[in-house]
Image 1 (cartoon, rainbow, N blue to C red):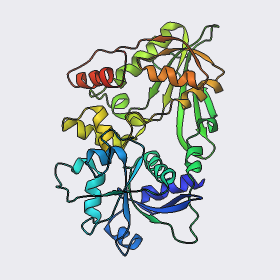
Image 2 (cartoon, helix red, strand yellow):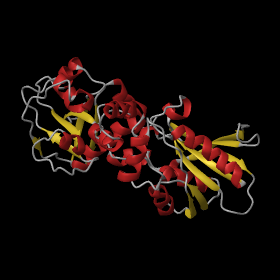
Image 3 (spheres, rainbow, N blue to C red):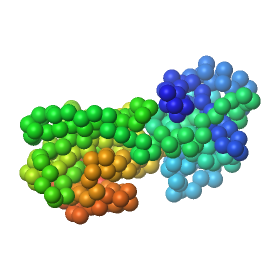
Image 4 (cartoon, rainbow, N blue to C red):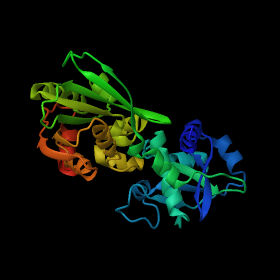
Amino acid sequence: MTKTARAIDALRRGWPIAIGTAEGAFELLPIETGDAGRLARFDPDARADLLLSASRAATLKLANQAAAATPGQAVRIARAPWIDFDTATALADPALDLATPLKGPFRAVPTGDQRAADAALALARIAGLLPAFFFRAAGPGVDPLAPDDIAEAEDPARLVIATRARLPVTASETAEIVAYRTPDGGDVHVALLLGAPDGTPPLVRLHSECLTGDVFGSLKCDCGPQLQAALAAIVGSGWGMLLYLRQEGRGIGLVNKLRAYALQDQGFDTVDANVRLGFAIDARDFRVAARMLDLLGQNAVRLLTNNPDKVAALEAAGIRVVERVPHRMASNPHNEHYLATKRDRTGHQL
């Protein structure tokens, strides 16, 4: 198990980790999976500051934060006597904004090693946790995780084909499934190959995992219908492939996606909900899809999408998109606002 994988496991268990560079190292305790007892052991003198994302800090209107914050940038909040574990939890979790009156004022201070602090937030996202920590300078003898270790864990060049097999499906009885993973495990992405190559660029759909839509038929999004319509379109085109990317909730994970759903029930759209949680509007990495296509020997595709960002990402990674094929679904009363937000705020060409 790599150092990054061990750190992710520790965060999910509520254990402290260390991240640092040559300029110094931090020890961090995750707020979501920690508790008051662990905080007391981690920081017996109650001096550890807090680390939040800039977008979350801007939402909370903390001192010295620009209104248009960079979502992935870390902000350090100075510890004050009234910041106990419950207060920190209220700062970290936007679901508590209406229920928990926040004390204050809170004061943002220089972060220190910004690169290491930003890497901590990236690691929280990979672990599927809220990007919020108690943190302090690391003591002697600590072997910190480096930001480059975290970046390497997300490097799509490490992805390899693990296995492939014939998989008859409703759309095509001759389909083949290909599984990809990195040498140290992690999420398994898959490609479903449909039809026989005919010398033309394949019709390709990049489909991000959506448990609620793909499996349970959620009406809050259009993912389930998009998945089934994409399979039918690929078969109808003669040949192609559907890449099923394990990037639930636009890359923030299932639990955080459900938190975003709860915020949507409070009146926030999908963009504002992600930002309020402390994440980027879209944290997916489509370089993964480019690597999957490259391993299948495909460097030119017809892309079934309404999202110009997917086209740009594939082309930046060396995959030529010879045609963007629209992929339009009918709306329903539950997802009308969601589809309008995709059109108006994230540039989808619906």
